[in-house]
Length: 190
Image 1 (cartoon, one colour):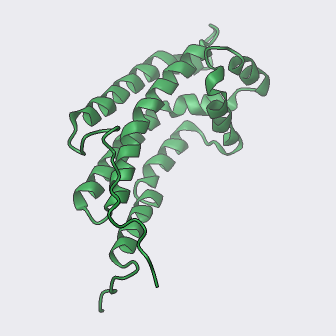
Image 2 (cartoon, helix red, strand yellow):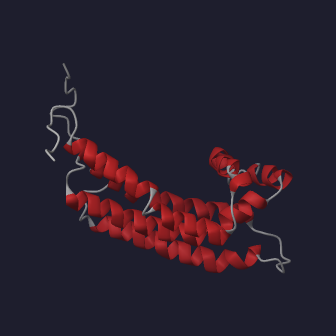
């Protein structure tokens, strides 16, 4: 016999946002989009082959962190809202819209992620020793784990955009299907 241990439990996501219509979501995503555009404009030239000045990598890492942090909150809220009620089409649409916007912002940052993964280990160790970024050492080291598998920037963008209609879409479909036909529910008659 199956028991529903979560019956009556409702997640309180109000520490993140009030609802999917909360204007703060748009403000956070809009701010992340603006910061990503500035980041790309300011730092892309630093990674071009003919750039001779030393890279301000500690500042680049701090600016990158700010963008990623701004993207995390709306992304987490969208996923948790949808996970709490996978049969709600409004939440499904909200999740999809949020994923699209996060992917668009992420695509603007790929030039840095590709360049970061191409840096030699000695340079990375030196940078991560900087007190201004050492608190995020684990995150930046983890980002480099994928270095041997990192493609060129264009290919990374294609993979990110493709994930919206492949892996992420399949995962959402699976969640919706399981919710509709899970334990205690009758499967549809063909």
